[in-house]
Length: 144
Image 1 (cartoon, one colour):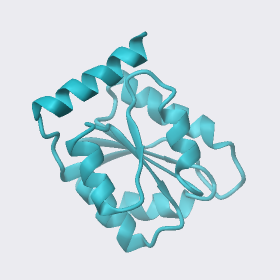
Image 2 (cartoon, helix red, strand yellow):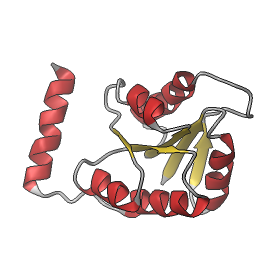
Image 3 (cartoon, one colour):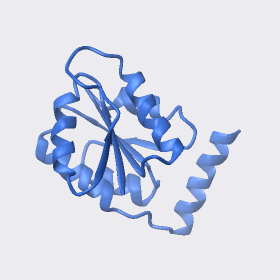
Image 4 (cartoon, one colour):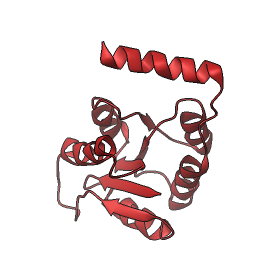
């Protein structure tokens, strides 16, 4: 499994920590490369483009709140990003919504980020008919 990861300047340290934590996976870093102020949409777009192109299986985006990255990623066709704040949301966004990206706040503790990311990566889509139907409805809206 290939994991894409991106951050803005506020998420930079958390991104480095998560890259180290994910040593068992191939991780591709889409920036930023330091703590100098940057515009988060540029890095969300790089990550989203990698998801669209099939270069990565899942994406992790980190910024101050996770909200900006999530909004940006969800503007990209075929990218389904959940702004996640806890393990339960990480589980449900994958098992019910088949999210292929999460956005998280750099304000979370390292341990909570690790738990969230692990649960997101390890949780399969449920393949229950009502969730398949709902995800298909989302795709219909996206393609309208």
